[in-house]
Image (cartoon, rainbow, N blue to C red):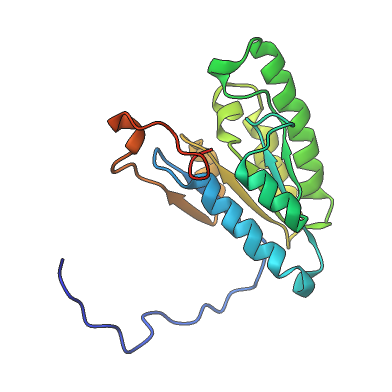
Length: 193
């Protein structure tokens, strides 16, 4: 490790653009995409007294009855988190049903994006129904383009379509450097559940 001298001056100029809703994407093969989106949702929810709008999280691959750690914590705080799917494709008993659930879920998420009542809408794991062909990319792009000016939308998942990346304001790619699972260590409850 190399020791660095702490900066003594701000390394950037203050942006002078207009404040507006952003499209943010967390993608890549590394861990932390959903976790980053949930952190963003908590930050936005904590500021709801400033903007007076709601925060909503839609999970495209989780079942509506999911009770993972994030569900329990967010529900206690009053942040709506909605499972729209029937689990990951390799767990599905009927991929046609999975596709139908994704389309129905998209209509709910689309309404939240367009209704003007939300400050932030998280579309967790939406890239999977897009790349599987379950959702039309054009509809997602059009909805994002037509959303009210102040609505922020965060999308997560691997292999994000380049059209979404091009449209986004901020894109972060999580890079896999090392993962315990590849060393034979199973997922840990409270860390990867």
